[in-house]
Image (tube, rainbow, N blue to C red):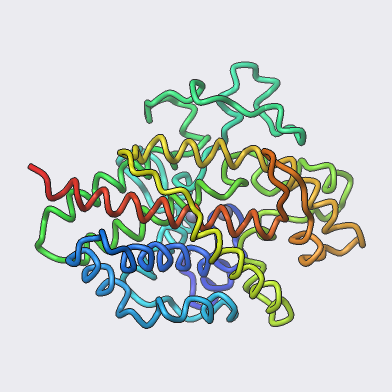
Length: 337
Ligand SMILES: [Zn+2]
Ligand SMILES: [Zn+2]
């Protein structure tokens, strides 16, 4: 089936398991580029390459404006913007990914519970009790469980390797643009807590139990904030949180393993799932889902009190900071030997 451009956009804006939303993914990439461009330690050549991929520096000066405005149904600009989102377009049509003998739609997540040894625990429990640990995940993409659980960990590693190789091969800048965009996409997906569970829509949360029409919490934490004019104040607040989270995001100076980083992102995200269930209950309190109430819901997790809006901003900022570190590291690696 071929989709018309309009149908595709509608689908992409509303499709369920695959993204921080188009604007979200582009924002993370632009933020990482901004961090590099403003870093006096970053190589000048890399800065120039990234600005070329973005189409100039004006987008970096207008990040706030970009966040506060509505989702733009026009096709994104080519280069880094487009590649940051392209994997979701390919996911919709289940484009083959032969390197894992799989399809694109399986590249964006990891259904962690499927690695529980007890079959009874291979489902989401609203108290988070079915979380796995690092040692439950074999570093072997041929393990049959990944066929359904998803390949995001391996995909990030592969994108990173391809990025290093593309930095070495100077035949065209277009290929590094592609791998930067792809790396950004999959890495960011791993920071979205609902990409770490079989219950990616939040349908097993108590708030959704017994509802004839279940509310998809996946959309609520991703792109819904960019869809309606009336949520402008929410977007302004989100931007403030994102900007300050970006300033304090942990930048690890040791060598970063892209595969391990992705697992960390997934497992740390899993810890917020019980909170998101309770936030869903707050959002659904009046019957109809209320996006403001959902984002205002606040709880103490891992010793920190935070709202769902702050959680969204922090996770996206962490993804941007990690992306920055990985791009710089890939660049340096490509210049060795
Ligand atoms: Zn995705
Ligand atoms: Zn998603």
